[in-house]
Each structure stands twice: as structure tokens, then as C-alpha cells.
Amino acid sequence: MVHATSSLLLLSLALLAPCLSAKQCLLTGKWTNDLGSNMTIGAVNNRGEFMGSYLTAVTATSNEIRVSPLQGTLNNINKKSQPTFGFTVNWKFSESTTVFTGQCFVDKNGKEVLKTMWLLRSNVDDIGDDWKATRVGNNIFTRLRTLKE
Ligand code: BTN
Image (cartoon, rainbow, N blue to C red; front, side, top):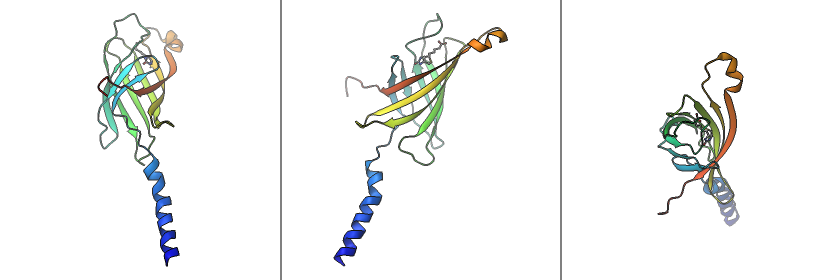
């Protein structure tokens, strides 16, 4: 009897362990990337949709940088602890658009990190310039900590 009870206890612990250890990576909040750009992501709704704002540290134009809106979706229908996502930034100081896709990870120190890749489409006047109108790159985002924290 004692043996059956302890086996049941061990089995329950083994089943619960992954749920207890996996910290959820959450998108909502303020982030900064390896270029020094900052973004704020708002609440994610029950369809996985979110909005936010992006302040880039760099630009491919000579225009004055302005805060620009972003819109995206989080894929978390299976309630993964490290979900994938994508968002689009509609730049308000240029005619360009950037799409980001990535995954929200929790690193070995328990710190959330967004590993992303992006495509930046610039506006060209001539279809002959299409070949040089799209840049590609990657960015790593970590949570922006304020002095208060
Ligand atoms: C433009 O130059 O037309 C708009 C700004 C583009 C900024 C790019 S988007 C990808 C990369 N990551 C950043 O944080 N900023 C640059």
C-alpha cells in the first residue's frame, strides 16, 4: 500500500515538473535591441493580436527618426512557453515597412530574450530598382529595465 502511494506521488511529480519549471516568455512590455532601438508591446488579446510602438536607433534614410506604430500576432494556441510571433512596423518618417519574425525565449538565467529576423522594404520609384529595395537582418531584444526596477 505504502509502495503504491509513493509510486503515485512520484508519477504525479514527474508529470507536474515540466509545468512547474517552464517559465512563460511574455511579449508585453518594453524591449531594447542590439542596435539600441526600443519598442513597447501592449496587451496580447485572446486572438493573439497586439499593437505597440517602435523607436528605432538607426535609419536607412536621412529623415528625422520618429516613433512608429507596430502591429503583430503571437502564435500561442498550444500555450507554448517560448512562442513564435511576428509584427510589422509602419515607419512614420519614411515610406518603408519592416516585418519582424521571431521567438520569445527564456535563457539559462531565466531572462527573456526575443530572437528575431527582419526584412526592411524601402520604397523605390523604378521597378528596375526592386532588386536592391529589401534589406535583411536580425535583432536580439531584451527587456528594458527602468531605474525604478
Ligand atoms: C527606415 O530607415 O526607412 C525606417 C527605419 C528602419 C530601421 C531598421 S528596421 C530593422 C533594424 N532594426 C532596428 O531596430 N532598426 C533597423
